[in-house]
Image 1 (cartoon, rainbow, N blue to C red):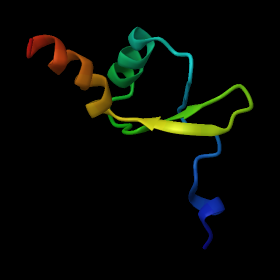
Image 2 (image 1 turned 60 degrees about the vertical axis):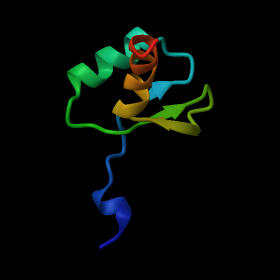
Image 3 (image 1 turned 90 degrees about the horizontal axis):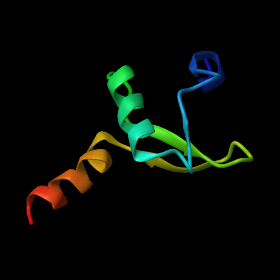
Image 4 (image 1 turned 90 degrees about the vertical axis):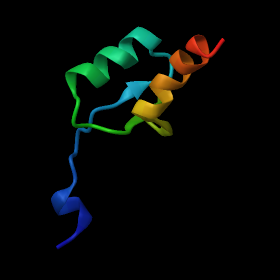
Length: 64
């Protein structure tokens, strides 16, 4: 058994220029997915975004 036999060949991703609103909506619609890979125009993974990352700006807003 190999990873290629188990992996999702079209995983849920977001582009690196996605808006904050798009990110929040994606997590709302796909609540079992965490983290989400972030891809560039060449479809290369450039990072990952977690639920914690989404909440960070909100915690900074309320702590002021």
